Amino acid sequence: MPGFNFFYNIPNFQIERKKSLVSGTISGDCFQVNRFTLNKFMNDKLFIEKEDLILVIEGVVLNQKQLLQKYKEDSWVDLVYTLYKKNNQFFKEFRGAFSGLIYDKKEKECIVFTDHLGTKHLYYYLENESLLVSSDISDLYTYFKENKIEYQLDIDASYNLLSYGYMLGNNTLCKKIKKLEAGSYISIKKDDISFGQYYKLPLSSKTTNLNESQIIDKIDEKFREAIKLQFDKDKEYGYKHLVALSGGLDSRMTSWVAHDMGYVNQINFTFSQSDYLDETIPKKIASDLKHEWIFKALDNGVFLKDLEEINLMTGGNVLYYGLAHGNSMIKLINFDNLGIIHSGQLGDVVIGTFIKTLSKEGLQKLDGAYSKTLLDKEANENKIDSVEDIEQKLIYQRGVNGANNGLVASQNYSETFSPFYDIDFFEFCLSIPIELRMGHNLYKKWILTKYPKAADYVWESTKKKINKKEILIGYKGKKIPASRVVLLIFQKIGTKKSSLHTRNHMNPLDYWYSSNEDIRLFQDKYFKENINFVVNDKLREDCHKLYKEGGAIEKNQILSLLSANQMFFK
Image 1 (cartoon, helix red, strand yellow):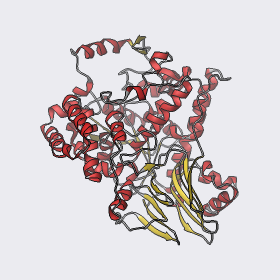
Image 2 (tube, rainbow, N blue to C red):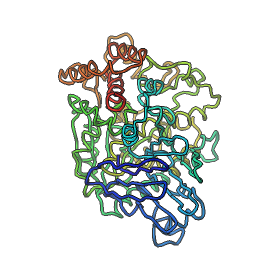
Image 3 (cartoon, helix red, strand yellow):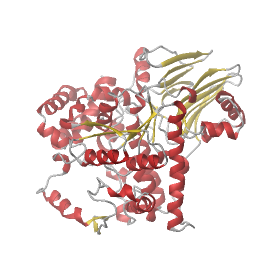
Image 4 (tube, rainbow, N blue to C red):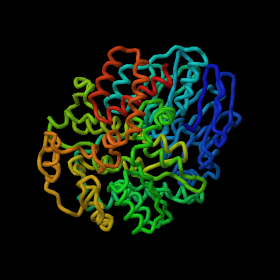
């Protein structure tokens, strides 16, 4: 992964990187910083040694211009220097996807940080007073092997992968490697290494003084501000806008509102099983908006062979197919003239909510696991009284720890951001009580009020337009469209197949596994060749059972683990 690494009181080493990356090294008595960044958005990045400071900024700071104006500075370097002298947590004022490091040579103090929502992953190894931090998790495994340091597969983390499809907290598959959590930093003061948190999303408000019309107006105002920040960054560098577009609402609204604001020079891109709604809907929208549009068919699931390519990026800490499908398209695109990869990531969580019901029984079941077969039910029980606390836990668990992983593949080619990640927008949405956001209620009203033409297209999730009234009925503690109840019942009793078993899905994994012999043979062979390298008896037995009895998603979870085990722990 592009970015930087930092060695402190620890032997450093050089790793060969892609020649296209911008590299550099700054060294001192007890440290070394190495840069290996994309040659894009270079005016946002810093890799500078001054007389008393070393400054490293990676990624994009979307409000850079606004900060320069606010503090009346002409230079980005001077601004960061000035802000640091005022407050060593100055990066709290940044907006965007970033990480960085400040080393004060005089005081021998250092801060390593990631952004508010942890979109720029940083992994670290800490042993006594020695520290290694890197944007690329593979660096840490290379360091262990170069220095003959023993390390083990974390069994609990392995079960996270086999259940949730991602890691919980700051864990990775390796016991010695941790991930710096969202809104956090590592502080070094005269060899004392500690951790701090400079930002955490607020709990949702229980009440609001605004009426529904005022809320919708404010949502729109804040969203347009967020759109302007990230799309103006493209214009600043003379890049075209590359905007994801699917059959859902989130990417649709990113593209639609940007277009409404005059950012019409868009190239939309879509990847899906061909002829499914995730192809036909965005194709129609892009055509009507007169955008350029790129489509890649995921037919036959050929991208599922990119198992080790994805795990090299992620360290195996996430279900691989969720990155492999997008990566199979993104890696084919020439990014020379393209800017930020704009998405709608987390949209339905921010304007909506992970909370589907306010009933006590329903709240206890909000786990978000791909597979519940090996899930530790007791550890997963929600023991928090407040629904607001549960929502915050789910945002960080399923959103920040889970969905954020979807950004990793794209970050190998360009910077990526979603207007729903804008902290000011996110915080306003959390000032709206949960019950008003549930069931996409407010989300749909915002679209119908402000952008009614965007509602003229089917919503893939419901297979209907949002301006068509749905009758909601109770089903297992949730409110779902009446039209889905019969289908769910038939699926439950086995007389109707899930869409994953048919072509009617963006990623019909079970259909591909059953219909594409090449993929089935590849996955089964990979399983057989690597299962016995799992040394923990119970974990190996559970993998055997789950692969044999589970569906295609569970097979993908197991292959993610086996690949990581083979690549990093064998």
